[in-house]
Image (cartoon, rainbow, N blue to C red; front, side, top):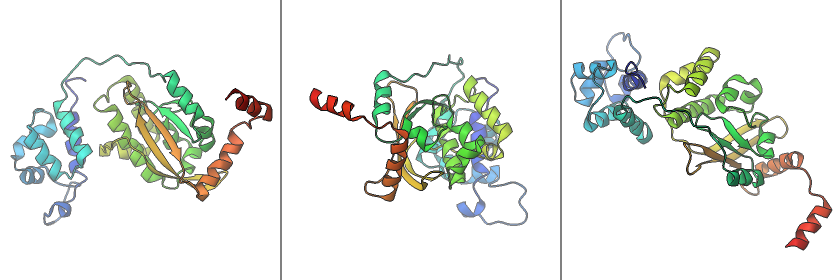
Length: 286
């Protein structure tokens, strides 16, 4: 990271612009020329001087105390994950850019993904697809090795059409991407992705400017699948041990539901049928 970067100041400014006076109990008098809170309002509510807060946003002071950061997090209405991110930005020191390490899928994990009876894939810290089983590809043809979740969800019309809650899905995706790369926004892969998507997608530009940060976690995912129609799956995201934020992602339905039946229908089309001879061989071997 170079000395010219001001990640802490950029983050404070972005979050300040998203908090309204009403949210923090301030009266609104007259026309306001700035979105969100003014700098002096943040400083007053946090119990610090306006000049000191200005130095923080401008990058002239990059070492605020823990108490100051906690006060700013309270004023800016940051949740626990975003507060940790704020502390991380303040603690981050200039360092030599690290050499990118090739992301690989351990052989045991590749076998697990291939054998799972649910859509499963492995994504890297930049949301590149590193491995995927046939059911994942049946859920979305873009879930294949070499794809990138950010690029596909923002730029591929067919992938966008899969998500009836596309605006929510993109917000979660970008916030998770920020969490995954942390302060390494200047590595070559991040620069490539952010630059490409900022030029091609107004929605991505809007979300990137918010500086949202959300821990990488699962949740309910709603799809509008071209073959089976509406489909709701539970998505689990598990960090692969010994890696730099490489995740195993598994999508599974609630048992006994229409969603389970629809996923079984997809599986029957995606997975080759087991021959009787193969089945007999497996029984005799056991």
